[in-house]
Length: 315
Image (cartoon, rainbow, N blue to C red; front, top):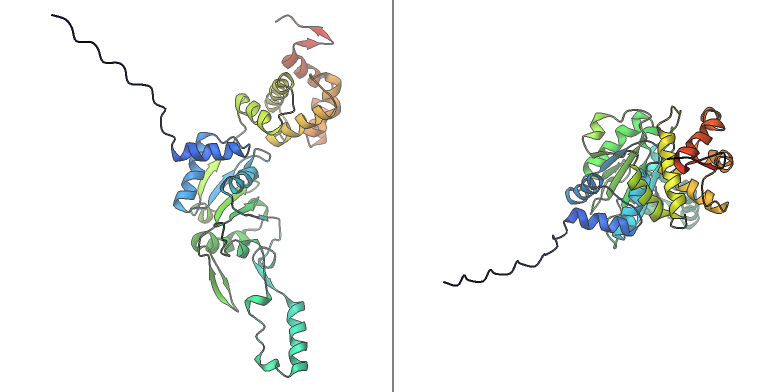
C-alpha cells in the first residue's frame, strides 16, 4: 500500500509585533534604543495614563526618553527644569501685573474701571505645568519634569494634585483640569529620595548604565561618524573606567560627547596622549582626572587596543 504523501510544512510566518515592539521601533526611529523593560513601562504609562518616574545616574538617558517619545508620537514637549527654590509662580502660573496695571489705567481713563476683571485668563501667564493642561490639536503633550530631586519637598507635595488628577487650583479662577491628561515623565538623579506619596502615583523604572553591546549600538545610532574600530575602543575604555573607584562615573552622554570630540580631533584609534588630553570630556571632577591621567589611562588604553608604548601586545 502506497503511503500518502506528507503535507508540506507551513511557511514560516513572522510573529506579529506587540504594541511594546511597535513603541520600541518608534523610539529607535528617533535614535533612542530602549531596552524591553523600559519600553514596557513607557507603553503601560501611555495605555494606563499614569506618570512615569525614571531614576538613574546622571547621563544615562532619562531626559532623552521624554524627547524621543514626544518626537516619536508627534507631540509637543513641555519641559519643567527643576531646581532648589522652584515655586508655583515659576512652575505653574503667575499674573501679568504689568498688563493688569495698564488695563487699570486705560479703564480709569475710559471711566469703566468698575467693570474691569483683573483675574481672567487673558492676564494669566502659563508656566510649564499649567501649559501642559491646555488642549492641543496634536494630542496631549509630553510633560517632562526634569530632575525632581533638585526641588524642595514642599514643591514635590504640590505636584501631587497635578499627577493625581491632572488639574491645578488657582484661587482667583478655580480649578483648571486637562481635557486630555498630558504624558508625564518625571526624572530623578536620586540625590535625595522622592516621597512615597509621589512614587505611588507613578510607574517606576530605574535606568542603569547599558551593557557594552547596547552602548556600542547607542554610539552607532547617535554618533554614526565615529569609525567602528574607534567606537569599540571608546565603549571598552568607558566600561573599564566605570569599574574603577571614581567620584562620578561617566554616563552615556559622556560616551557620546567623547566620540564626537575624538572625531573632531581626527582620531581613528585611542592612544594615551589623546586620552589624557580629552579626559575632561569624560570626567568632571579634578580628583577623578588626577586619579586616571597618566599611568592608569595608558594601562586602560593598552587593555582596549593591545598596544603598549606603540608596540603590539601578544594576546
